[in-house]
Image (cartoon, rainbow, N blue to C red; front, top):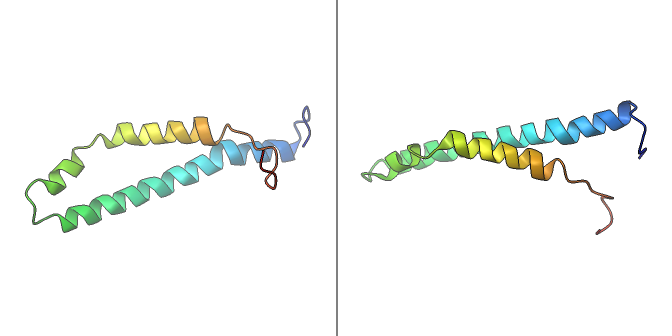
Length: 86
């Protein structure tokens, strides 16, 4: 991998790691959380406060924290090789 070269291959690899993977992971996670929220609300209809407590969670703050974590931790870490351990 070239260190100083900024040809198309290096930029495309960087874009995939910094933009595409965090966005795809974020969307899949949000959709999964929404499905789980709707399913748990449907199953807890018989209980008095089960479904109401789930909808009162700060979903916007939790989602922004998840996106920040995906971008800062997972996309900015570099791997030296996929086959090696270190």
